[in-house]
Structure formats: structure tokens, C-alpha cells
Length: 162
Ligand SMILES: *[C@@H]1O[C@H](CO)[C@@H](O)[C@H](O)[C@H]1NC(C)=O
Figure 1: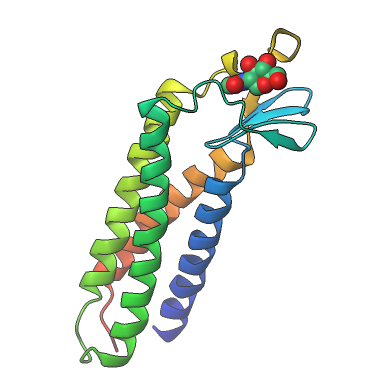
Figure 2: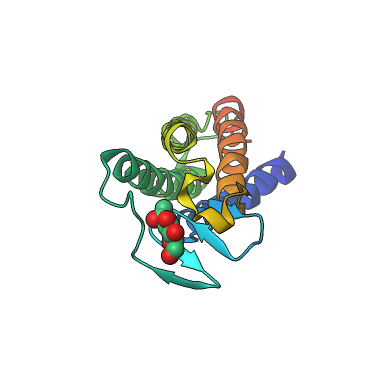
């Protein structure tokens, strides 16, 4: 049981880090040449990023940014609550509050990445010469965090403190 809790704790920290990297790295879509990429904040060519993101002011992008930031905040809160409960909660109780907070984080990722997929996960972000593209690691990390957050959230709800 202790090993399982320690494992979840490590995966939870990894999820926070991956969410952070995913949100700040501007590598959501990448041109197939690998020279150009776009993210939630900037438009990058040859590793130099500028604010020339054509859809930067759109509400949909702002919503994605907001939900990704919320997901980081809820993931961190859930981690802190878990540590707190680990030391203060009576034996036999479930980590209900950590689990519920982690599932809110999961919902935020779901909303953010869904909107991104619907609106921006296409190659129109790139110039004619770079018109072929694929998903970048930020986008993939966000989906991995989505899966991990669900599993962590459910495990917190199910596990009892021993
Ligand atoms: C990013 O910059 C390139 C060239 O600077 C431009 O062709 C492209 O349309 C820009 N993409 C977005 C989404 O602003």
C-alpha cells in the first residue's frame, strides 16, 4: 500500500511537470520540416519565437490558455492536499478531497485540449512552404496528463489511508 501511494505521488509530480512543460512550450503543432511550430502563446521558426501568432487574440485560444493554467493550479492543489491528508487524516479514510481536486484538473485538461483540437490542431497555422504538419510534444504531453490525471484521481478516491 505504501509503495502504491509513493508511486501515485511520483506520477502526480510528473504530471504537474508535464502539464507545465506542455503549457509553456510552444510546440503544439509542428511543421513536417520541424522548422516551424506554434503553441498556446507564440509562433516559432528555427527555435526563435515571436508574438506573431495570428489567432492570439481569439477567445477560443484564451479559453485553452485559461483551462491549461487552471489544470496546473488544480493539480498542484491536489498534490498539496494529498500531502496534507497523508499526515493529518485518520487511518482508514479515503483521499476524497485530493481525488476530487485531481478530477477537476482532469476536466480542465479535457476542455482545454478539446477546444484546441477542434479549432487549432490543423496545418493552417503554417505558411505555404511548411504546409504539412503533425502534433508536437506539448499536445501529446497534454493528452498523457489527461490520462494520468484520471487514473490518479480515481486511485485517490478508492485508496484508503493505512
Ligand atoms: C507563423 O509565422 C509564419 C511565418 O512567420 C506565418 O506564415 C504563419 O502564418 C504564422 N502562423 C500563425 C498561426 O500565426
